[in-house]
Image (tube, rainbow, N blue to C red; front, side, top):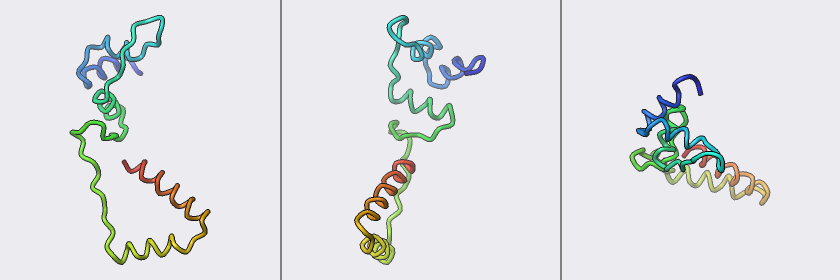
Amino acid sequence: MGRGARKRLADFIGVPPVQIARMLNTPPVRETRVIRGDEFEKMRIFFGEPATNFDKTVKPVKKHKLNAAQRKKFIDIIEYRSPQQQQALLAFLEAWDKKAL
């Protein structure tokens, strides 16, 4: 962090700067502090990362629903693949879904 970054982060999160120092400390030498979920969300925003939706004030991404023709085409594509290809496709979609959240 650059000069004054802890103070700016503390102001953004709404805690005293000493709390940021405690969050960064490692036991057993110094006093530590656990980062709460809402603080974690604010930190992600401060550092330009996408929200994880732990904070209920952040609205989740609207999910897109497939129409009947799209759903049929999707199922047809998957149905006619080998079990290995189906597993690979499922793993890809699950990873993609996690990134989209």
